[in-house]
Image (cartoon, rainbow, N blue to C red; front, side, top):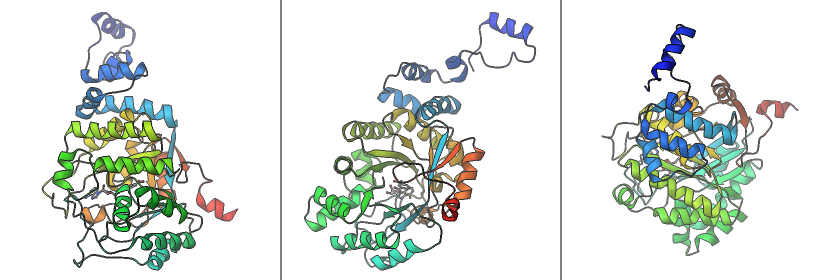
Length: 397
Ligand code: V47
């Protein structure tokens, strides 16, 4: 803890007995106990972009409150006291996958026990379940060895018919690369055909960590980081907003994390279509990496805060409650995040890897979490337009 000059201490002691133990009122030196954060704070005050060295200072700092103070200021500048949530439903159409990633407990090889595939009609029946509104269907699966490209067009058509009011946010850049490989069409043609079938946004999965060292060890069969970024750029050029993620807490270094974030920032400078960044806390259970300990709260909040500060051109940072747990996600709203994701209803990827949260949350629970953390809840659509809330009031009107 920095110490105030002796004269100040004396004055505080004589004028305000009992308050002399408070930190000095100089903002930066009083709040930041890690000296490595001071030059970063100077750059932020001057409106300058952070670089790799700044990112490393953030990613290695143990001054959680200092990080939070800086990130919260950036979050408030972008989104005020709003905290967003979405009435969504996750649909996983299949987990049969050719990639075999070491961090994944969800995927199965062809013919392996536990593999599943929903027909378009079965997926649509899931989408139609429940009487409350669904504003977004979040649809992801696997790189299936046998399905033809036509299946994915039929899937979108069936989902659109089942929930005409929901935005179809479907398929990661990795799935798009796979559809291109199986169909012989370019990624651009694949995206155009999916758009015609109803695709309007894309989730941010599959980015993992872009560093080739990490990909070679954990997911050698997967789309490269370069290709993931290029497909995101193609989607943006077609008017399809996408999200971005980073799977952290396994074998990656602090530098690889920061380089991943800077690569996303560079892509956003070029194509501008990323809506939100979502850090994904690695869940090791039932994976090939099950000897790795789950992430801790310091690292979870630090990644959220560092992301908010480095990704100055991303409008939103999402604290995905399924992976952080609802309590830490709520706290993350004061460490740079402005979105909790949504109602979800049914979640498999995290839960198959040892996730212990509920399968879904109600709109009332999400609003309650946000309000109790001191923020204003905003029901949003997939494009972050505010919607009337709570949803029941819409039904009654
Ligand atoms: O692509 C896989 C990751 C992703 C594990 O865009 C794992 O709005 C942790 O991308 N532990 C799927 N993570 C989740 C995802 C997502 C979630 C919520 C919102 C959005 C969005 C996107 O989860 C996968 C992979 O990167 N993952 N295995 C694991 N064991």
